[in-house]
Length: 403
Image 1 (cartoon, rainbow, N blue to C red):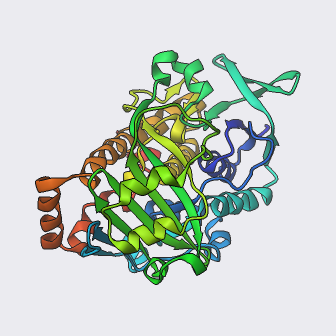
Image 2: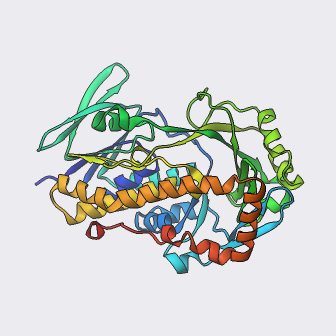
Image 3: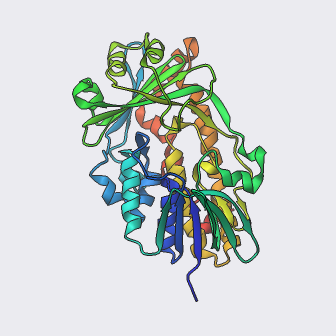
């Protein structure tokens, strides 16, 4: 009897993790990616223990370790004077939650996952291939593709749609209403600053979060502290993206006024950036379903979320682990996909909603901001960190835990 086959659309973090996890359960996996090449896109990622413990089991953590940084803390700062409001300790994350807290470049993580996948004979990867839809029966699912002028279909036992927040396959599965994204009036600006151009405080082994009225700034070192990753989130008038995702045009002169009242050290770091890329932040109200027959959504296709809890990649990695656990324990594919949905939907939806709530906390002004700052100081970093323990500890990662 031949091994069951999964077709995965999307070779991002979620898609590659799903391929590795399903291959561990004896499945043959075909991954298809629309991009012609897996270029070094994106910037820094914060990988919390709920993600790194899964990466370890997938065999990708060791390959990432040399390029990643294990921080000592997250520092919360008042924007106007740089006063420390709280210091959340992260050095003992491995002992507390089963995996390290890491800073890594998205491209380094993708490279580690690709290296792990290349060692697995059961995984194949096709680039420059765009999914156009699917058709399914009780016996199988056929995914339809185009590559240049040619059209073809690939048959599998399940189809995993890991094709991002603007998922074509989600539209095919649930229709246009499920495709609608909630576009924020905030934009995220990202850049990498060479260490030689960065102030010393930005090279400390910690993440710094500067909280200001209507804007905030996050930075942390990457790649052996040779670069500083910076994310600046600001309020901007809604307008369409003018370039591809991760690479919209950005003029530093538009960014500087948002930080005019920030501490001089924060302004200096923003000014040190050689270039910026930006995109409009977006998410979507949680779906009530991720699965239809033999087709399952995963990652941003299922639950795009705002970045204020740094959980986008981590939740996709959790999805992959839960999918593998369901497949391992339930032989019938459609039932396994339903168990995966049951194990993950409520938790991922809760993280989506918590990320929305965190946005408001980050951008308070006036008396509410002053009250927030006092509350953070009184609570202290260790108690603040406990508010995120439900995320970092992981949950719902096995089919047996599904409600």
